[in-house]
Length: 337
Ligand code: COA
Image 1 (tube, helix red, strand yellow):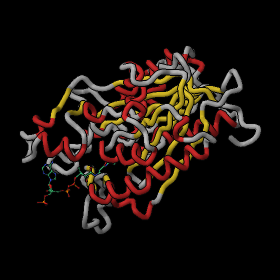
Image 2 (image 1 turned 135 degrees about the vertical axis):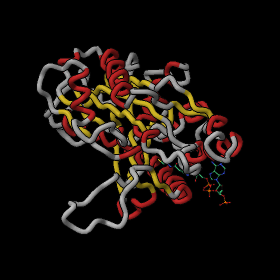
Image 3 (image 1 turned 180 degrees about the vertical axis):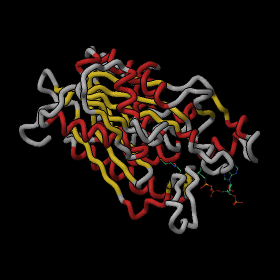
């Protein structure tokens, strides 16, 4: 933490996943694949998907309400909302503004969407830390709500096996005891390799000028092999650097809570840190990749299932489209979820 920065407290965390489950077996109705193929390569057995009129707004709202309740902060004391969705249901009004209204916040506080794909939660935490640290805003709500299945190409068996929907939220405030819950945080990007995962939005030209030859489909296009190689080479090393920056050793940190993209990527990070299974939180089997929401979902569910004891420390790490990546070593106080 830079000198004179106000320390940050993680005050509440919440999550929400849709009820509807799509199993690997279900996907065999769409294309030639098998549970065995998907599970051995990814660790995924099933994922949750929104249905009917349900959207990231509904998921984000419930996650936010849970996080606010746990934080003990009155909803009208929130003074900034940052939404870190990869796939907001609308470009505008932004998800953050929509949630401000749905949460019943009557004050005119700033609310904005900030996209860093699957690294969104870590990016938003860094932005919130800057605001709190500089005394600009006090009680910040971060919402990572993703509707990946709305932009998945359901004809592409190489990508549609991976993604699911879900939301996570965090309330962060100035620390009341002088202890900073962020021991270290780092975010990075390399746009020169951004073509590894793309979603080109449908577009048009002014009818008076020549049309572009290619029109975006709005669906995810991914080179899975390249993403995999990027993740296993860049992320484990980066996580080590985040731990080093925290002034702790890997052994001194209680849990690894990584972005849930692929079980083999999680294991690559685990192996680098020489962590036993009980220190690594993985729930990819039941949710697939829920983008920026995956870390808070894994964290809160880990606490609910007794895998994470609060009053501990964890290293969080995210990576995804951009390409972006980030990591944070955090303190998990009692009662935050
Ligand atoms: N079921 C059965 N076969 C499949 C399949 C599926 N769902 N998807 C692809 N295949 C086939 C391919 O057609 C290919 O067949 P071919 O050799 O006859 O052409 C073969 O399996 C190998 O495909 P490939 O794409 O090379 O597989 P892979 O071993 O790289 O695994 C991923 C694919 C997507 C599981 C893997 O690359 C991955 O997880 N990458 C990381 C992606 C990621 O995490 N993205 C999000 C980051 S935030």
